[in-house]
Length: 364
Ligand SMILES: C[S@@+](CC[C@H](N)C(=O)[O-])C[C@H]1O[C@@H](n2cnc3c(N)ncnc32)[C@H](O)[C@@H]1O
Image (cartoon, rainbow, N blue to C red; front, side, top):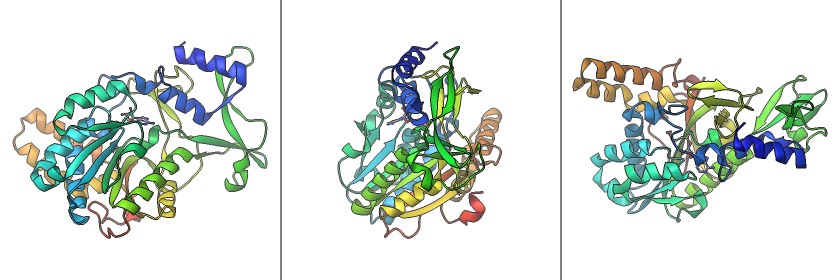
């Protein structure tokens, strides 16, 4: 049993079942035992591989995207470049290297990293030393001014609530203890939930997910870019339209793991509902582009041309690796369709690189 499992069990014994959101938050962000408090989670030797860890092309194209949006903003003399959840710092290192082709942008930016994990901060410190980043626990402490925000696989780590349809009621899904074994199990809260009126109708057994923490962050980003100028780029896996279904999943050593097994020692994520983020951003006064499928987004930014350029100086095995990364990042069987890009912008930005594709076609 993990130390965090023992702590959660004790809490449930004492106070009763906890919501899925509380369970997810404890598993990922418990101050000492949470998943991200320990390092070595991301990459081949860890539990999962993200897009920037797959290929340098991903971060490079995002760096050039930021430079292009900065120009579209009127090339302000100062701009905050903010990354939410920078992981090992790979995306930003590749982005800043690519941005060297736009020296005025590099000169204008100061780098802010929103990261709660001390061990990942240490990796970021090593990789990004030259850019002299400032670290933050939360977006709110990033100083005011025009900003460009990048968040890759960040929203999926913010907690979700789940609700289960039982006859004519919606009940919040909770984590409880089995009566005999005291193993963790999912259960429905005994009383109907206050949100029931807003969850619509569905057959008994259906599960819907809501993510107030994610919507609040989308609204906060929107309020900032609308007031101060700039844009936020969110790339994550999820769906373009709302739906029903349980998308909570755990990953450990690159394999699916039981969501309730080994809390704090397996990554826990849930699909992002892009329509909810877009609606929250619009309500807060921002413009929204997308979602478009990651494959379409990266192709529109020129990933195929970048792969061809890298291939020209590559050995045969390197060329194979470049092709494999391209397929993984853009292919429908890799990350190309399930992952999507959404941009939240100052309303005056009327065109954005990567979002020219028809959303209907791109974000199936
Ligand atoms: C799935 S990793 C993605 C890392 C990186 N963006 C990448 O693509 O490789 C999630 C990142 O968000 C950070 N993180 C998770 N929850 C956070 C929170 N509530 N506040 C700040 N950072 C958080 C983690 O420590 C980690 O750096």
